[in-house]
Image (cartoon, rainbow, N blue to C red; front, side):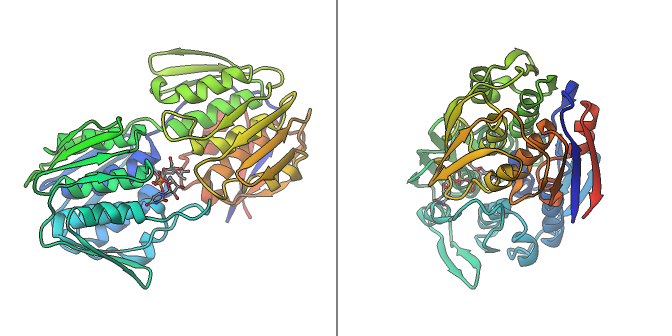
Length: 417
Ligand code: EPZ
């Protein structure tokens, strides 16, 4: 177990470069198994979730090699439709193996996924999609078993614009006979990124990024190379750290369009944000202003940015209302922020954040990935020393976070707990 020791109050100054998107990487890497040849994926963040996927693909018989932020994936001896149970439960996105294995072999055995404990995370919409394509789906003993003599394209209406279900159905439908139409599809940037990769391999995906995605199945998919889009949530995390420390930070290697909901809300909170091509410059106010925010599917304010934002608002000069509409239990950071002097009350899926003039460092514990980002931001802006325990959870989704913070002038050191 490792912790990050933060001595707060340093204004973050300078430039930081964002890595590839975690949530796109964990879809693109398993998708490469659909190709009949070697794919090279670039701009991958070398985070734990990506490394776990490399292990899973190797266990399935593919040959995988990593060099810097690139991964080469060749199907070679890829022949097993049974995913390794112990690795699968280490991450949420392992469920994408269901769509890939079903498309490739007509059958799949994948353990129920793991991932952050932010509330119930069912996969009923995924199974609804697979069944619509002609697969039998059962869940027994913690394992999802899928089998289809033949996958046939079909219309599928998602009850909710689920990112995972949209991507998983795209994966399975890419090799189905005929056309699949996914209605009420998720529009997140990583859905589009995966669609671009599938099309590069020869699939026919139209409409990704809108709420109607059409997938015309193909019988063969070829090797293709792909560069993963920048991580909008890593960018958001550094933007918020700049605001929380009254800093002045240029966040490089971003797609500004993907950051629009973040930029809009941080401007409301008093930040001066200028954007130009592939970077945003964020200048934080002396003290943030209160704002109200409700998390929504893209292009609404992203749920993954809610927890870091609450740390910014904890020091606002007024009361903010934060509504978490996507998950039942995504306020795991609040109790830890209260230890640092924050004044926050949670009622159901709403947090009432009464800003305080200052936070004071304390030992805190990371409950989930974005809660970790939230506690780091709080520690950077707090007086005194904050010990963020459970950094291995943060390392699941953020590459070289301590190094990047130090390059911006933060006083942070890593220790073993
Ligand atoms: C993806 O999770 C992300 N994870 C999450 O990011 C992100 O919070 C979420 O999308 C929403 O943007 C990855 O991409 C690996 P959903 P996913 O299916 O696919 C419910 C992070 O911090 N739902 O869009 O699981 C579900 O319970 C992580 O990087 C069903 O009810 O999200 C949730 O309330 C955390 N049935 C809502 O829909 C289903 O079959 C949105 O879930 C599927 C989902």
